[in-house]
Image (cartoon, rainbow, N blue to C red; front, side):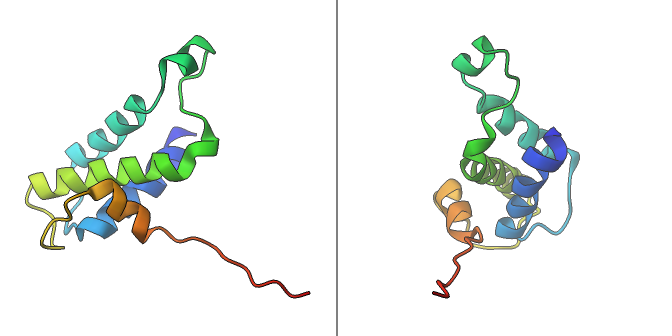
Length: 103
């Protein structure tokens, strides 16, 4: 569940926003570490090992920012210059569905 629901959406977004030319193992590690940091102490006390899925957009933005930061650090990013705030940049690049009202 962690890979498909939590890691991969943010991981893919991180690759896109950085323009990464390759995927490095350290980028996968950065995604996993970002997810782990988002689990609050209250979540652990409830027996949860993942943050609440209701926060998935915030979770994905943070994972994307960590993956992009690692891509820049490794010299694999092609989208230059590096955005100052990678979390905000990731949020601004996310697709947000908006539907017209037909009635």
